[in-house]
Length: 305
Ligand SMILES: [Zn+2]
Ligand SMILES: [Zn+2]
Image: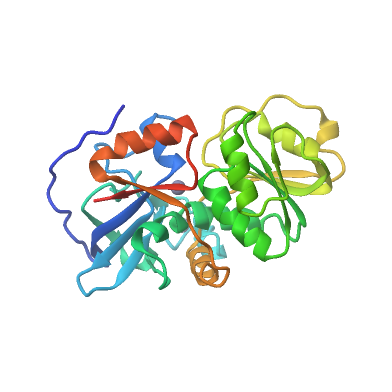
């Protein structure tokens, strides 16, 4: 269902929360999964958006990510895995997000943002960057890294991977010359569709297409890992055990921890990561989502209220 523009009350601020004037909010594929009904338990009505750059009353600039709240008490929270919290709430899904002029957030889950980034440029770091970075960590010390789907997250993580000294291979949809040249411009040594020209040590799948799982498994060497970075993916087709044999593994990445955020946002200015951003007025949120759905995006889309 398309989003509707509405005048709503400025959100009230609860204990431990901070009121933010939204200065930018990144558009994420997860927003599309919510709007398209592929993630099926959103709060309704809902303000989507979980890559919020906002300004607090006292002038501090804070970033609000997908992880809005965790219980602190469950076995996941107690073991440093709050990303898996049984009772986690998510921004722009369980609680209202940043496709708005104002937002409230639990201050304990907000991040101070590094200097040197404009508001629009910082927004995509908050999910595409952060969850991309968590995905990258799960590839260990893989030297030859394949990125499947060269969208928002890949354009950020490519920069980190190269800075870490890895070699980069970008797998795009067939005939997507623009994505391929974008990947080349960011330093990929190969960009194309189909199988990369040599074995990979690990792959990250950013595109929500299950058929990429056996394709990526076929491309990684023995002991290699295939990381599925998205929150939603179409069904994975059956594949022969032989593809997994040789200690290859497939894993998903779910959400983020606050430690991920702190680590990644400290790293971003060191690389330094530069985001490529196209901005839309808040009123154009549906157009931005349609553009993301079409796949014709170079870098990141960001709304400005
Ligand atoms: Zn996201
Ligand atoms: Zn918990």
